[in-house]
Length: 153
Ligand SMILES: [Zn+2]
Ligand SMILES: [Zn+2]
Image (cartoon, rainbow, N blue to C red; front, side, top):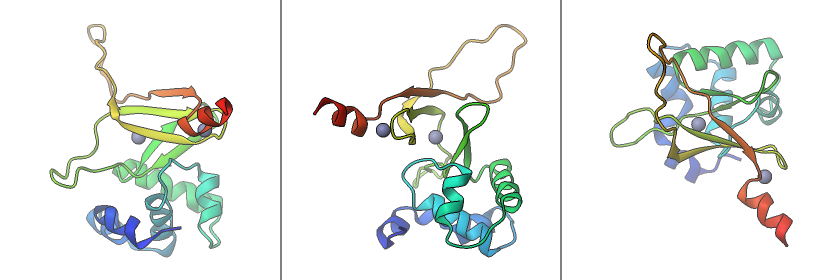
């Protein structure tokens, strides 16, 4: 659920403002997708977004809008493997307004959640001469702290 507190915390990622700032037409589907992502602490797959939307949205429309958001840099696409992607609203620094820096992602193999570990930046990698980095896709697979503690008890 999207609580008032969540919306306050993420004032800068309000769906209507994000759409406006990126010169995208305001549609109910777009606003709902962004509201679902803003209300989640973990990255969501297209299926998970769809099931939380509480409105009819065909897959083509959903994927087309997710693609637009990714291209505009409004959301991050995390490639888990060749079949699965998860989507997340980037945390923005409220004061500087900068997008977030490259960070490590963690996928829990037990509960399947994917989290952005914002405090764990990706170490710079030296590439061979002539190679140009476009983006980094760093996903660590393992047990999240919730599942790990459960297993110990
Ligand atoms: Zn877990
Ligand atoms: Zn992330």
